[in-house]
Length: 163
Image 1 (cartoon, helix red, strand yellow):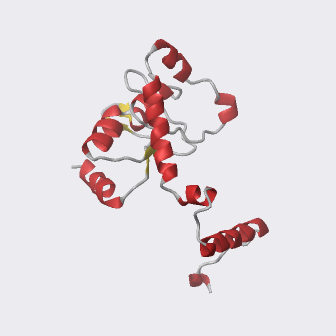
Image 2 (spheres, rainbow, N blue to C red):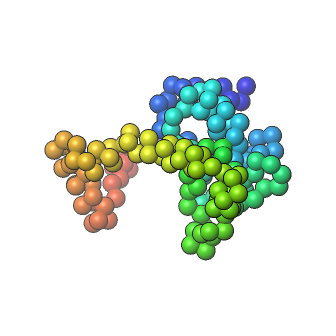
């Protein structure tokens, strides 16, 4: 019964990205949960977007046994495609088990490619690619430049409710 609301959002919402939670389902953190991210979300519901962790998460991941915040291999196997920023990425860089798991065969190149493909498919569906390729209309370019100039000047737009 808990999945039905999510299923409706995925099937009807035309989502391009989904964020996993800090929480666990049946003892497995959602970031590394193959059943949720691959079998149900992608397999049964036909989701084709990207799955990412929560931002600034001090997340733990597990697919078997004890939780481990550096078990990125579990995330890749589960098709959680993107580990979002953490509190000290430079300090933590390379402390995960991904390279070791690739060398040992616990993660395959195909699984890494699959995650990269999921990310690239989302990029291909966003206006950012159209902008980079010069496919935007003149009005869109002008609006984008105006918004960028306002941002650089530090202008913050207030809502009409405050006026």
